[in-house]
Image 1 (cartoon, rainbow, N blue to C red):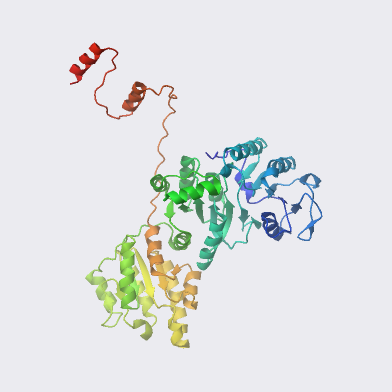
Image 2: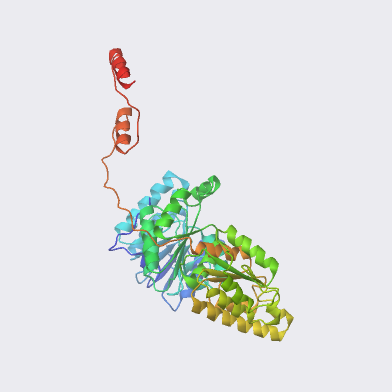
Length: 518
């Protein structure tokens, strides 16, 4: 079980803004983590001192390398250790002796390999704690903070306002691509690894305090202390920083994968769902869903969505969007006669105005019809959100005049959405067009597949406000007797019903008990 940092003394914040750093195991070999981390670390030169350490000395990446931390003339606040497992313990001791307040363990080969590795991991963790320092990992891929210019992850990451806490480095790389597509990036990144010391709850709390973080994304295989996770996530949600969770454990295969990956014990999916409901956490199933929801939350924040208006510029798109929206668990209800009449005044006679809305060629004739119809629809009290779908973004292909009008309309749509305060998501077959980019840049989520747009709306209302934490029962006396009658008494005291019974030692007692019980 992951230990949680005490409220005073050790502090996970030092991981994200150290005054100086060192990379132990820095290398010129491009196949080694020590090389990848050192390359990224050197991007910080001019922001903070960066020391490269290699036991052979000489130069690494064209810069002088110390043979050990003891050779350095000044203390180092954060040390990244990327040496083979056999040298990890000694490297951590050297880091603590050099004054490190934080250690990032890139090295693998600990709890994920079994009992011997777990014992080594625990021994190192206890030394770090005794020294008043913190340990991230081991078996992790580093840490980064775009607000402080910290680049100690294995790969460069786009800057933004999402903080990602992940037990998978590759998951971070895939998510970075999806976030970039929505104009988003990372405020912070921390690779959790084995969570021997600093756990996901500690890092959620740190990100909640962090001014540059607007949303906290978590990929986690082992939650350690589930109550601490729930408490930290609920605090983040109350502070206006939604927590979006991607986890595993829905299949036997994923459980096996997590155990071999970080030695993690995954939690039952129903238990995780209950914890998410209690803490107001959004749960997603894929990295793409996580990015899509992050973009939608950026526009609107947590809001309940049940009734959706579908706005399309073609009958096929209108019908398909209505189907996938309802398949996502939302309703596409028929509009009131009043709203249908208002829409009919803006559209040609052939248009569909009962929900879904089909512009029926109005876009080609007057591109501004998108804005007028959207404004009327959003003003309807019975409409929670709008899903716009179809060809918007492609009208520029018909000529410069229509393209200019389409781009101007995109800006007006973004202004309208910001003023109305209701979620609007856009699916377009031209998601890379100037109009689509203008929408995304101004906070309107744009999707290349209509099912993504519908799912994002459904997820938006999937996490109610956090519940008040349940009281923890007082610890019970440990059970020392596992006999039948003792066990039966414990279960009965907890409310489990049993048929009548009696404990007997002779045949006569058995007959008497049977006659009494019946």
